[in-house]
Structure formats: structure tokens, C-alpha cells
Image 1 (cartoon, rainbow, N blue to C red):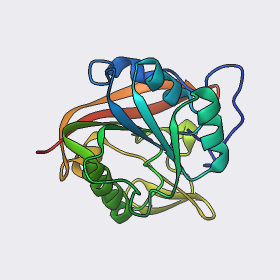
Image 2: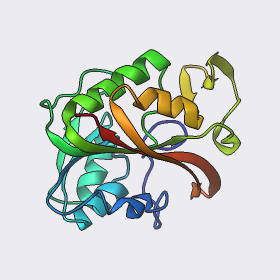
Image 3: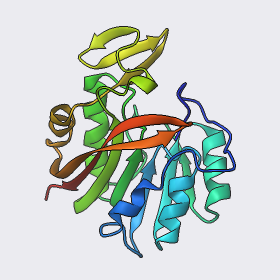
Length: 204
């Protein structure tokens, strides 16, 4: 998880966001190998380790990877940019988790990222993600220049995508069978944030 500018933020005495993965412990079970795509402050890594999961944390910021390792000693960390092919084997993971990390890209790049996520998940495995929701005005929905539908250059050189349920389903369905997409409201950096949380199963 990163701050609204997309850069790592120092961990406060409290979590940066809610423990949202607790709703998905029916899918995230002990003994699994799970990739967290965009590990940020490491709170979700710590939760996953607490479930008995073998975690690989992926992020482009060295500071984020260091924080994640402090939060969850023993995890594996990999630095990289999700806009490029993921440096993992085909079908390496039982699941991939992405919290507020896949909504910074134009549609073509987003689709390529999802294709890569599908490649590294075993058939029948799960992709659990949450993304900015259309209408998330506290976190810059509608601000700046609209480059594509619901994709804004909110400040010079910094982009954010906001998803409707239909758009998120369209993005996921080439690789995944969507189990659910649920709107959620949580607190992030002391402001109310609107998200969509998706559970999607890798097609065989």
C-alpha cells in the first residue's frame, strides 16, 4: 500500500487501512503460496503470514519491501515493476493478492497486468483485489484530465483509474471467472475511501 502520491509512507502507530483480507480466509488458508502485488507497508503481508501462508512480497519501492519484511520476517521479497512481465514461473502461486495497487494504469497496461497475474496463478487459484471505485472523490475521482473513461491524470505525470463493477468485471474476465465484486467503504489516511473488492478464480 502506498500513499495518495503513489510513494511509500511511513507506518503510523495504527494500520494505514483496515484488515480487509480477514473477509477472505475461506480462500486464503495455511500452506498456500501467495504473491502480494504491491506490498506497501506490509500490513497485508503480516496478515497473510498470520494465516500460515508462504508470502512473496512484490513492489517497485525498496522502502516498501523493507517495511514488509520488518512487518513479516521470513517473507520473500522481490523488487520489480508490474508494468513489465512478472519475474515468476507459470502457475507458481496458489493465489495473488493486490490491495490498491492495480489502478494506476491505462486500459491496455491494466489488461497486460491481469494477463500476467493469470499466468502466475495455478488453474483454479484465486486473485483477490481491491481497487478505487468510481465516485471515490476523497481520493481524486474526477480531478485533473480524463485520459480514458474514469482514468485521470490527477496531477502532472500521476495517474489514477477508478472502476465501476462492469469495468472491473470486463478487465478480469479474460483470465478469471469472477466470483464476486463487492463495494466497500473504509478509512484510509483518516478519510473515507470507496473501493471495490473482487474475488476471481483462474480459469482452467
